[in-house]
Length: 475
Ligand code: NAP
Image: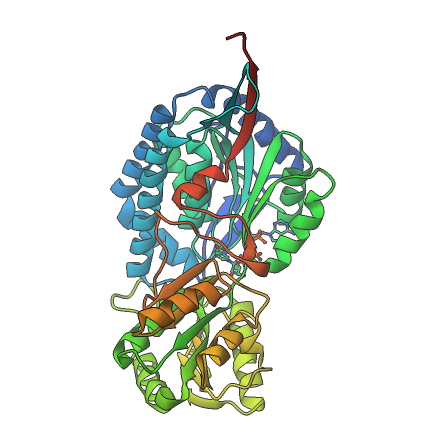
């Protein structure tokens, strides 16, 4: 079994205890990764601070060239890195290749944005004064990331943070640290100065506390569950630490009877099954207008039944295993709960095989409002369908959630599309589009799905401080 060290201040550091990494398709141990204690994390923050004092002085163009160099390294190693993602996360290889491609795109987007941290000159109110608005980096950023997109979600934070002139300490999820190690290898090969990017692993609450309480860490950026997001908010109170929070989602899909059925079926299918349903923007609730309800349910069920489920390394798979047994048990509990409340099981519903954490693609129809799968993230290829009659009813159902990360609607009416985009309470809205994310546009949640935005020009701004400089002049 291979043992991977952590990347700390430009060195590789291998110390026990080691964190074991499993393959969710087989349950086998893949590798182990070093861990460190809170004191060593504090050292990483101190090293990151020392590196910040030099890194911030580089022109944005030079920092951007470093990001392009990391992207070049990732591209060169893309086949092997995609395989690593599939091995530790389980997703089908083609989707891991897509994740690597999006990672490269994020790096190149922010490499160019590094030149565009514009301030502005504001007209004065009083003679003899001039006002500048200046953007500055924050300092050391502590990042905590989840397992479901282990490479791209780390880079979605790291690329803008470094572009803006900050330094970065990454704590990946315990299930998927190998993608972070591969990223660190690419950073090292790209020749970034020591301490600009580091990877730590260990007791998550302890590392979180160090990020929150250490005054050298100036911002904590987190992607993960709303539950852990709440803990970070509480922990940030004592030091008033700035937080960016990308939290859970519970995306509704609204299917109206004025859309070609196949467009709605294919759009809902990808929104449901991508990443084995373990995406924060996964379709969790599919509301279909009653006039096309049965037709949609049977066409969608046929497509779900045709999905190929298996080890992500086997060519042609559409759906891989769930991340672990807890994920599998949660999905099965959601199915059981919905059926007990009167939902109809149109396909699937059971665990698949005895090895790994596979589940049959599942469709539940007539799911009643109180069902768990209409309230909590299912995080599995389990689709819950329910009918609606009017547009107002559909919007009310879609917004009846404490989450607000993403929403989807399928309609042939431009007027309706505008009414929906103005009414739906979500940070990302896909109208006739089941895959709405792009490097170029902001991403983030409303309500309990989070604070702040990543990607787009907003993604850079999240790692910049705004200063007003008032100049008293004798003119
Ligand atoms: P999670 O349990 O919240 O874990 C996320 C990260 O937080 C992991 O690195 C974890 O470390 C760490 N963590 C756990 N407890 C902590 C604590 N007390 N203090 C500090 N850090 C702590 O979430 P997950 O199960 O990995 O990911 C799935 C969730 O992420 C879903 O809710 C999904 O919707 C959300 N998500 C949101 C977005 C978005 O952009 N909004 C994107 C992807 C996923 P360990 O692994 O070491 O425990």
